Length: 85
Image 1 (tube, helix red, strand yellow):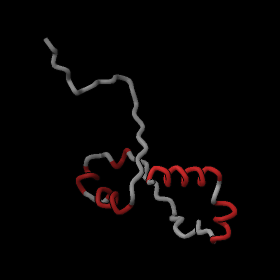
Image 2: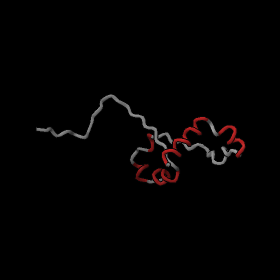
Image 3: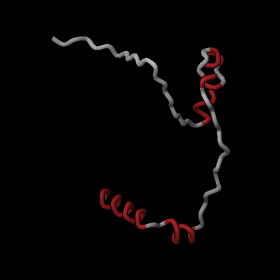
Image 4: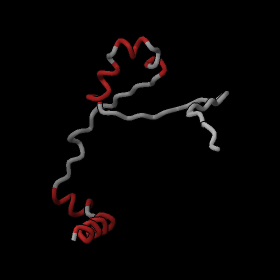
């Protein structure tokens, strides 16, 4: 017969590192939740919110045509067009 397998794993003498990225609108409610603060989880998190770069990477049409349309971009565009056809 089949044996029941536990979904719990115990790993002794191990550490775990997790890198999690989230949008501020999704993360802010958790960061300001008193229950989350009281559990001690936030004290174990290194939270970093870099300055926004929105609007700093705008290219003119001329820049895009000379620098942006690479061989890889053209190849990708042709493949997508073929798949849609």
